[in-house]
Length: 115
Length: 190
Image 1 (cartoon, rainbow over the protein chains, first blue to last red):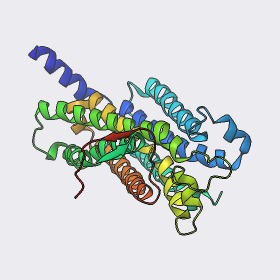
Image 2: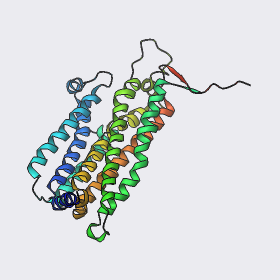
Image 3: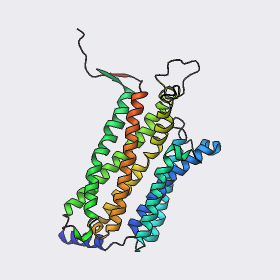
Image 4: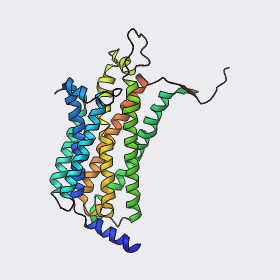
């Protein structure tokens, strides 16, 4: 058991930063998708009606469901590409945090209404 | 002492899942901050890593429970359309807020922001939990990654705070009420 634990610890310690970078970048893309889809649904009546997956909740159901699918799909793709790689984490983190900040700003109605 | 079924769901959503998430937030920040210092931090016991993973998974579950109950149970009641000729808008919170210029912004800014920004919380928290599960003790060897995860948790908490604040304010100005009545205690009139 202790041998198994030490093996797990060693494999965790040796893990490259790729999977972590994939997780944070895809989460940022998912967050941005929430904000962008909400703005697009507000602008286009056609898209708005397409995004009504559950009528009582209205387009919010589609906005959030599609955003989650975008997040998970991106995560799966990035994970498969970066699983065993070390990537430029500083740059990826900066992009991810910028996207996250942008998502936060774009969900704020006075900013979202500018589009 | 009684409340309605819809009022009970409001409590479960806000005071149950949402408030528990907010209460848990500071603990996650402290534990993640320990991993941002890399090898400058003394050895973190393995049990602490397992605990943090379980803690973040619980937070993620709370975040999902909050947004799902909010979006699919409470929000339909909030945005219900009143039949033509309805003069009492008490059962139609969105319409009630929009009917008065003094409360209009609680919907146009408060609810419009809350309904979208809240969804950043489960995404960011699930990511944090997944990274902690995946890296465990190894996260300490990637302080840059730990710092990025910490920033996401900060934003997740901020988003949850915004949603919680507006949820409380909206409920104060136009509560989601209705459905069957649940009686807790029978008081005595004097």
